Structures are given as structure tokens and as C-alpha cells.
Image (cartoon, rainbow, N blue to C red; front, side, top):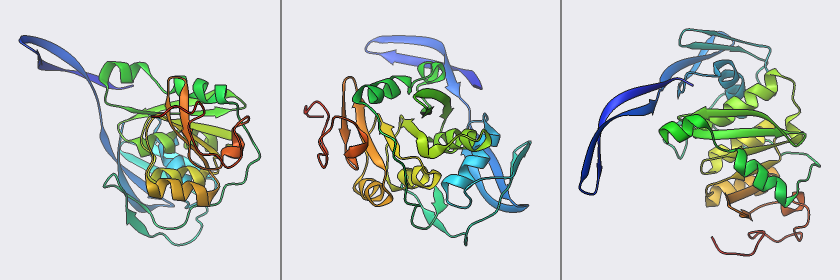
Length: 253
């Protein structure tokens, strides 16, 4: 992970300290699809092939990619495109592709203990050093397949999905864990990738929950300590009564 140190002055109560603080980096990348400029992405400069492949799949442009090439600040993706490209403004003030997400079809289920294990994996040394990165993890066959860090929460999803696409991992049998909030744009990305279960440390929104319900995605938020809250499709968490959408322990947030 590319990190840099910057001089800073830390104030804590009456104590003033000069120090060198560890800061995460960000870059602007041009994304081209089939040799046509598509968009610019502000992202951490790692896992760029995965970022390009995942963006195309998560935005519903294609279900797979043929090739990804990175040269300098340009990411070039080649894929068979599904449908017309139309943009919309997202809750993060970024842009994404307009349209209904794909409906997820998957028969996988998990145990409550799996949620806790996934939650514990949503952390990284880079985050501990900077406090300025989002983190997403992808579990396949109950094992951690990939962990991605980025200055943007959407990018972390693109990167873990891109890893799966480039390594022929069946996303319909995966669970994604996220550090960030789950509004409609995030849920749509995950649904377009075909991932059936989301575990997030953070909150969702009304449209995020409605999108998950409509797309057939199990949305689990507030995964903190030994509790979590299921908002949609609880049948995928074994031992939880069908139709009940509440924290597994019954305790309030």
C-alpha cells in the first residue's frame, strides 16, 4: 500500500506535539472500455487491474471481462457490453451507471458465527496506520479470498469483485464484507456482481435496504462486536427465524 509521511502538529488538550503522520495516497485514473473513454476514477494506486474489471462488472456493463491493461494512469478494459451506458449521481457525489441492478440467485447460507468472522477480517494494517481507508473483503468457500483497501468505499467493492472475475471465482457463492455505509449505489454494485450476502460494519439507507430487498441480497449491517442487524432476506443466515429483520442478539444498536 502506498503511504506517505507528512509533518503535522497534534493538539491534545493542553499538549502540542510535532510529528510525522502517515497518510494514504490517491490518484486519478482514466478508465477506457473497448478503447472508448468511460470515466475517471479517484482511487488508491493499487490493484488497478482489479479496479477496472470490477467497475465494469459492478456497474452492470458486462458479466465478465476479456482483458485489462494498465499503463500509467490509464486502465483499459475489454469486455462484451450489455445495453446502453447512462450515468447517475450517487450519494457519495460520484457517478455510476443508471439502471436496475440484476436480481441475485444463490442458495448459499451462513452461520451467525460466519458474520462475526467476516467482520473481524474487515481491517488492515494500512487502515491502522492512516485511519483514512475503506476496506472490503471477499469470502469464497468460507475462506478469505481477497482484501482491498482504498480511499473510496465503492472502489473497494470494484477491486474485490475484479479479483474474483480475473480469477474465475463464482461470485454467487461469495460473501462480501465492507467497512463503509451501504446506500443504494453500493448495494447495486454488489447485486450486479451476483454476490448474495453483504456484511457491513456501518449503516444502510432506506433506498439501500429497498434495493437489497428487490435484488434478492441479504443485507447485514452494524456488524460490531458480537451483534449485527439483518435488514433483508434473513433466510440466508441459518438459525434466524424467517421474516425477522433484527439484530441476531436482539440488543439495540
